[in-house]
Length: 135
Image 1 (tube, helix red, strand yellow):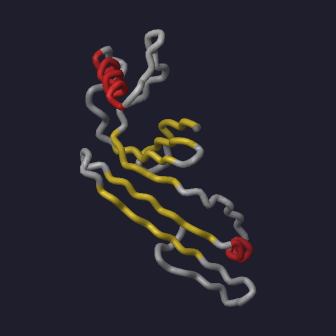
Image 2: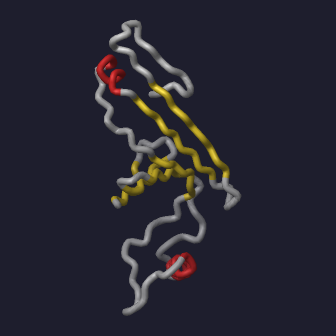
Image 3: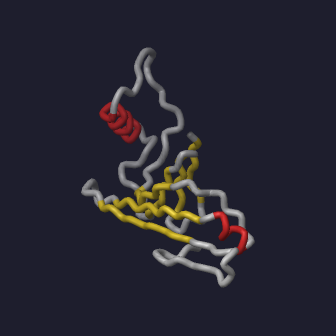
């Protein structure tokens, strides 16, 4: 959709369009996870010249993950809540022991996109939506 690092100008000076993209990739030392995000900006003149209206200038961070599953409803004892990451890890361990979650993730990699609207988990080709959680 966008060409990385290139700028495009139309022949007419009144309808000049500019597309600039910036991409970065950071590898994490935690389990070989990688994070890549792409930020694209599109000026208003280019939408007029191309005939497309693209008002989506929001950024989305994408992560390649191994998807284990989802716990639909957290059942906590009265007066208890998950107070930190250790409580969440313990809850996941108990769910795995109860058979609600598998111990080993599937071989297929998934893409988890995080934006200001929510979280989306889809297959690596991004055609099949696995899960969507709105914020």
